[in-house]
Length: 494
Image (cartoon, rainbow, N blue to C red; front, side, top):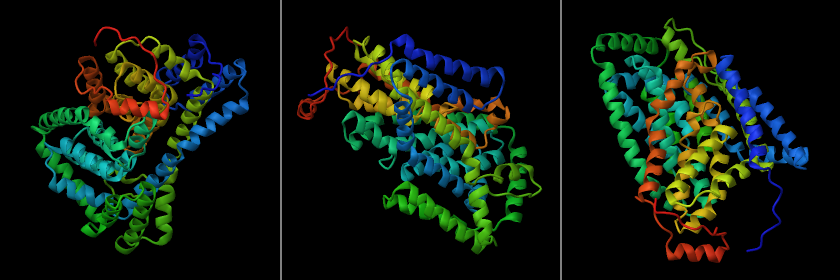
């Protein structure tokens, strides 16, 4: 295997400077000033990383190229974000979201609502291959249903996030589900199969918690809940045509998913069909539909709950999140191009001698990259590249690595507020963190499935359960493809 001359990497001490300073500034902004706006701290982080690059002899043009490279790779997600913003506004105006809320309030049981919300989001996300699309449409409707049942918003958000991001993790249509096996050298279906030992137990544990929580919350408050339900359903009927026909946009998007069409055109078609339904059934004009897509839906129904829930959507509603993503992606790209992330990961890799520690380090590094760089793609790609030779050197299949970076990357993304995933969840579900309601951050620990799965993955690493060794065929494939196998002396069994 031919290797190029290694570039100059910063020492661990130097590499930590822009990371630590940026996190300190971020903490100052959020916790001291109480202002949840991570944009400026991330911009300062880019500047600090550029200065470090200059110290290392890396030109600003090179750093800038790294920034724009990561942004370019993530452009499909930014495009989906804009289409989802359009979709939210149009589907509310079409009566699609109101109809989902209306039927949900009349069909679902309050006691099992949280468990049902998680499972519904999981099924939709597997079908669509996009957690963001699921959160912004079905998740929004479930927030409305939860409000009617008197379920706290943070609990509903936790159930929606658990289902949507778990479904995304298992969907062969998902970009992150394809990225993880691509950077670790396995097939997507081998990857999905190897994630089941952590996915199924985590989902079952979360399901049990949501069932117990649902019965405890609703018990003794049913009269209050039914009054709220009547108020919401009455307001919905007074302001929208509630009909199965308004669900046509959802059926179109699901049909496109079954036909295995790409998520972006599928969601856009859903927006177009939603616009037609809005004009045909709700009496909207063409310009009204354009307004829904651009600035979101607006209503004054006289019901505060309905107004706060349905006054949202549109491309402009996503601009705060998109600007945050651009800065977070830029910071991640600068850290990668200057070798900061590589230097930190190398310092971790050099100390690993046992498989259990390796699996925990891979999960932790993907999570830490999510925290620092704010980019779920970078949190999968970079640790995937850096840790793969160590897995090969220890004789373990890189299927273990693909699972680790998915769980530290995809599943942790929505739990970090300034990450692309977390920022979208906060915006789409109407969590008031940007308005100073820091108590809404409780959705993070309540997204049980997202953090139980990585813990199970680490547990399996130390016990050896569901941790496949590399087969002779895999090792032959490594040799044939010239993959680097790091010479690692195995320590005591994990």
